[in-house]
Image (cartoon, rainbow, N blue to C red; front, side, top):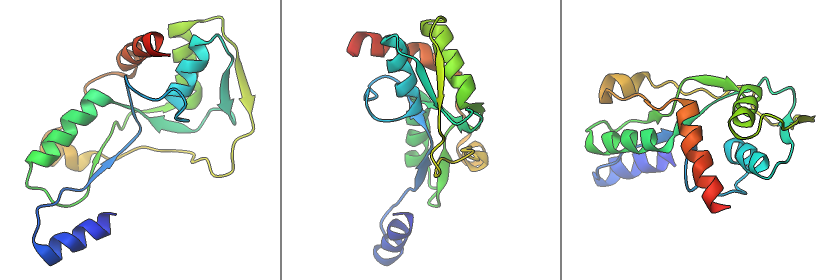
Length: 158
């Protein structure tokens, strides 16, 4: 998609912005979207065991939706026309995320471990160096604070 946009820009002289979005979470997520944040929250709110695949040592970074929208607006308002990453570079293990959500919703829940899918990436962490340099952007909302808002939304909507 990035190549198509760049080619279209070059061929037709249109104004294009290319943004790479990384693991966004927050209110209005679908409860069955298969994402780890919504999976854990929904399981916890339903008093189900939280399911971790593998040992939970794989890492992810999570960007709260308000930070993402702020970054998107800055990208669109800028003159920068090459790909730029918008995400949170702070990494958490899946196990850390599970325990945090468990502690926020119901500390008595159990964690169960299942086989790690073969194609599950070990790490996902965006480099936001360009976003910092060009847009003066970086995420502001801490994971726990964003999770509290997301959990509240799910409590009222599932």
